[in-house]
Length: 563
Ligand SMILES: CCCCCCCCCCCCCCCC(=O)OC/C=C(C)/C=C/C=C(C)/C=C/C1=C(C)CCCC1(C)C
Ligand SMILES: [Fe+2]
Image 1 (tube, rainbow, N blue to C red):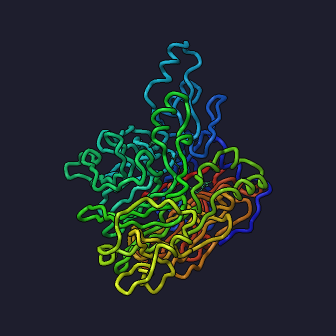
Image 2: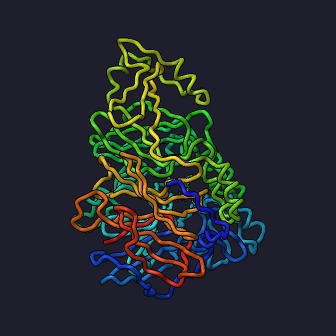
Image 3: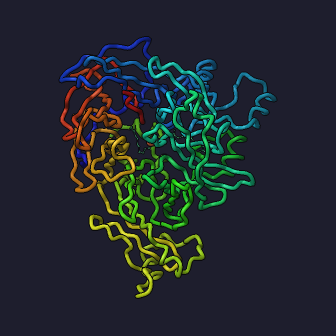
């Protein structure tokens, strides 16, 4: 699955270019075939406008949200796209400048206003962005586009019109939530977000938006916090991009990528800095795993620790006997990966792109296993927990802190599942040190933007994960990974740049991988049309069909298939 493909022509630069929205849907030219049962829409979102007037956006996560839609009906395919009319977009268009600060681009006060009015604007409270470029998810019968702040934007999934902006802070005690909620079979939506409470008390809140109400009222109005995870540091919550859920547990991985709240609340408002300026790495804490039970919703005070990594995407988690299996797309080390995702880096020539990726954290798909039965040992282990300071020398410390005794499980591997090499070792200070089993690793070749057969396998034992292959950050292949055998499959074509593959199950399909993958591909080479929707057989990644259009697509992050 590790790609050896090179991109000297730099065709990937196309996916970081501004495009126009469409006045109406365009019909695509189909080759191969479109399964007759595929009747629905593929909705995806990403940045579509990378500059306003003469002001460029600097970071991959700054461009203004553009929604893409492929409709499938009677084996015909149409394509449509529209910018979301967020406040960030509408005000930028109106004033022809960046008005709301984005992730890596600060907005400056209107130069036309006089010096006194500009001075006061500097001290106004921070205007949080509603630029919903990351994902789309259902709540009740509605669809929302989102970023990771407290604002989500309701859209019409047919016309792509923007319907309303919702401030989650009005209903929930959170400052933002992830763009990766879990949606239960009954339609309940679970998510997690930072909560900066009274007296600067910090926590991570798991929230639940209930399913569609009998009286058809808006489920968001009935949303509530179900459980809280504590923060490892008083003023510095960790950045969270996704979380895990099993039948009975929530899994939260607290990484060393920290948001410095003091910087966020003070410096930014005064000096016109941006979100990226508020991040820092904790070089000593490593990574902490947390668990909470779902019913009753209760935090479980295990102290699972491992070495430092960045985490954006959980693949899946499940319970097996007295263990929780947690599969993750990790990036090794505490250096924040987003530091390497400035557009200037990604738009560089291929040799430069490779140089920069060589300096960044390296990707690895890992399986961690959390033992649930550690009570009998913790009762007589020395359990006054102190933050560990010596993670740099972790291996040495594991040896000196642990000892094997006939009465306790200290120093022994607590994992007894026969199929894994992952370990969990109880240490004298009461922490449980985890070492992963590596499911996939290849230098600077990431298996990212993971997907599974979600309706069948989320939170359950499973076999297959699908993902986008990143070659020095450039998306150039679609991958499938058997998480049990580590067997891999790849779809790849020269000078072609695909997106996250969404799995759609074949109606009545019996096997976990009975289905198709939908991905949108940019192919700027002259010999073909510049963009297409690609349908792959999820069994072996062979091509079933493609629907080509005369336009390219800027990068998209996530999306959904709406049957
Ligand atoms: C698809 C191909 C991509 C090509 C290159 C990609 C390389 C990618 C490497 C893999 C990892 C990818 C992770 C993708 C993550 C993603 O989609 O991130 C988008 C995240 C965004 C836009 C986050 C916005 C967060 C904000 C604005 C947070 C704001 C806040 C704070 C920082 C502190 C206070 C609270 C608040 C306001 C929520
Ligand atoms: Fe994501």
